[in-house]
Length: 245
Image (cartoon, rainbow, N blue to C red; front, side, top):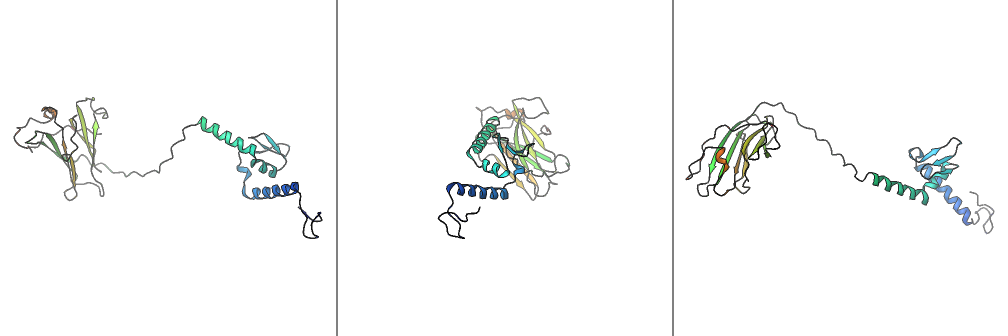
């Protein structure tokens, strides 16, 4: 904008602009700056109609050029409509989808069969508390794999009809099949009598499960033959029932 030959100004130095002229100049500079930094083709509310003018589909306003539209987008009306639209979309979709988790590539192994096992029944000679000691042999266990275990309710498995009197103890280690022992559904003693040990040299996994006392009666007797009370027993059990999970 030319400010030459204005009242109060020196020749060649520009004159004093009025408030309206300064506003026009400011809007023009903002328009030029916006045209350099904003891509109108990505604006979902920007549209050029059939007569060559521009429309704001959000506010339903008409504009003669792109600069006028850009100035409108910075105004109070357009910003208020944007906030109103965002609030409406949030109300229509109150729960945002959870952020996608990075995919972890699963390691695949060729199953080579069931591992060897040994189950030993135990009884404390002083308290009569009963326990089971599991020994699972994994001679061909994969490199860097540690055997895992977990308890499973009878209602989780699909092999046998569910029975609340029983639960299953699962053992897993690649590349062996996952196996499960059917044991009485009793409360497990989580004190120091429950422990696990994996011997990396012999590749054997040990787990001891002790059951809490229930008024002198133990349903473990239905799982193993009754044992004489005076001493701790270490006789191997008959093969327990396996279920593949």
